[in-house]
Length: 236
Image 1 (cartoon, one colour):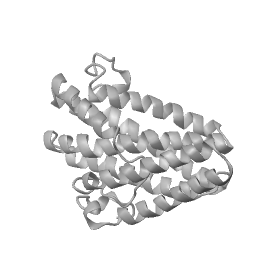
Image 2 (cartoon, one colour):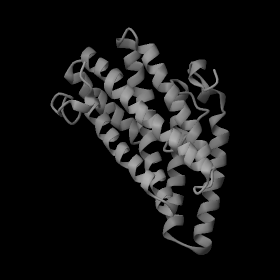
Image 3 (tube, helix red, strand yellow):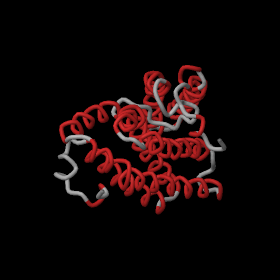
Image 4 (cartoon, one colour):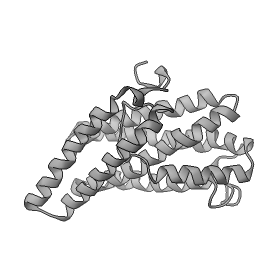
């Protein structure tokens, strides 16, 4: 099977195919990883925010739309998706720690080094093995339909790391509404705090921090943690 990385747009099923949509995000991810590597200070933090807004909706849509299909149509779909889910889980855990670290600290750069390596590995696992197998199993029309469903979920998915939420339905599906509302409200507040200064910026920052605490509590609601395989979490 040929890697998505070397296939033309037509081979991928056209611009609406889920394969083409995935590859476009992967190209942008690679650009952002290199940009973060080269940036410092506030520019680095902004690029990390941009990367989160790309990575977490992308992964959420995969886990909600694509991986259940792969488990149904591929004989080895269970193990293939479990491997990716383990990578996604570790990325969520590491990003949660990264957000709490000083961006100038050794710990921050250690965490980022591991995150960037995992993100690159995740892309290779998907483009070289998982998605080519899906491509071989489904007709072009089905790949285009999956692309539309994946895109709809991606555009309305949480935009922040949530390591407690299940990587599989029903937990991740139940989590979508409350966590998306919280995350995107925080995104709006964070943009406001960057554009303003003084008391207004401080108030937006405090409200965003409060919403982060709310999200942390919501993650632990039992229905949001159901459906996942125990092996997904690190240390299992």
